Length: 318
Image (cartoon, rainbow, N blue to C red):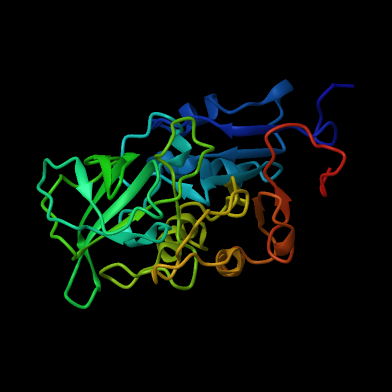
């Protein structure tokens, strides 16, 4: 009797390859793990890294129904689209609208800055801290002009001033910003990335600002994650989604989801996460898999756990 057979023991491959473009299905197949000639029972794969491989992954899933293939995404945070992330490539996101990130309560510039200014006078330093921040111009009514923004890194906080590094983490080029009509907001960042300050939380709340075509952060994420998995889509044979580091693994600290300048309770985020899961389940249907972190509140929608390591005695799915 072979050690490995279709029933026991079960085998899995964590974030399998290939991640680079393959020229043919045979090339794709050649890189699949098949111990003793058997495909693994479960495979999670960061397929989004190379959409040109979708047809090969989908064919593999169709021809090997004994293998559950899951498409892996980071669900809580990421780097802006186009940013160079050499810390953790899984964090690369498709979010590019600045209003789609979680911000902390902010302040305003107390004097005009040029494109080369590094010491910025601000109305208050109460919420200023070392880490990423958003500069966004406002109109005379205080509404944010989202096309006039810059990401910066606050390196130190002084008396009435902050010192910053300009053009941070995929930012547009540095520009002039006016006094009193520029909002300065620190950005909570996800410390699980190997490189500090670069992974920012998606605003999954109902208050998330909309981009120029009316989309929230959740809309953008769902389109990218789920559209390929729909019936007739290029990944319609994939078994479901694996949300690496699911939304509630780390809750953003000091978050101002509705941008009223006041810290909001965590429940605002959790309500958004519930909607996030609901919308995913509506597309996946009852028979496909959604794995994420240990989000105990949402067992009506998730049916598995992404866990890097062996199960612990207190794990609900050990």
